[in-house]
Length: 479
Image (cartoon, rainbow, N blue to C red; front, side):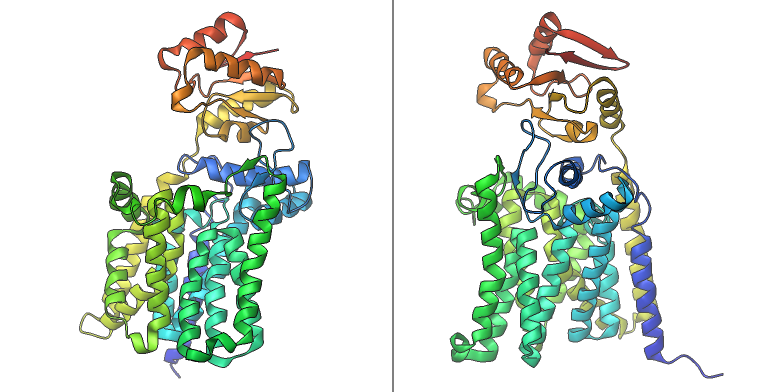
């Protein structure tokens, strides 16, 4: 009997790894977006998909359920993910597994591009290991099936590097066109993806040297990759009532850039949340891989890795949302795989590396499982609100996060004030203003009113408005 060739074995293992990574994302695929670990962003994203159907079915008019009555257009990233979900909802109905399959498929697509890049630089065995590692970092195990735009951004971000690298190698115009389009979409979906432009710039300079300013394809690339995102965000400025993106760089990032890393908050994030998301083992392998990189041949990977370290230091240290770490995970996976392949060729052997990968993936998945737990309190209260109020009723929720509004499929306001304006009279005035704008119910989240010290405001509500008791939940009818 003729044995299976080494190449066929690698092909079979490749297929197996992709199937395994897909299967790992199927449990809890029908979870509503109200998981305790990341409710706010997931529920906001899913609500925007519903609002496309309930309101203006136009990708350029995204809206949230707050703060105020519809329409509530918002200046956020390009809503490709939510619009695709909305289209699927339109044909197949509201099913949460549909909403989660969209980011899962984008993630699997991003894994394909990562595999191709790793194979190009380090061979098929390294590509297999890199793909597996990329798929089992705790951060990616969770957010690859979260109802959020991160996986779509990863898909276009990694694809942009792949196509630009292809253009550098073979000078095909089709590659630079694809790179430009992918870069534009990556930046539109998540602005920090712009850091992928650093290795691209270096690659262009290395290839063309002093003639780099004479290459028309680079001007084409710059215009196509940067102008659409700029135009999109400027357009949203003209219609949005809530600008989450506008002014972030000038007001929050640039003034703190270079200094935030030294703050106590950033150091706490990098010593707790970052290892929780990427593991100390993964971080260590990444830096070992960067240290032993062969710069003459592998400089695009090395520069890309350094660019994303800069993104972490400048952006993530200020924003401190762990899902902003996703852009460094492809480089972590590729460079870690480089290290593991070199080890597998030594006395340690392939079996030891395979056992390590199995244990690493299993342990990470075990650690992530509790994050899939649903917030039954929010879901239970939302059912009460949906039962006792009409769909067009505007409600006030007594929390900073909008999850209860999203879960109850209602529009209204979050009742929160800056810390320097929390005196009792200001709260009363705020309630009076919102009531005048049509607020019909005031809904504490599980009986809790955000920052209501001494329950003074809760007492005021009980004394002046009709109290509605529904099991363990209480809310107040304002008019």
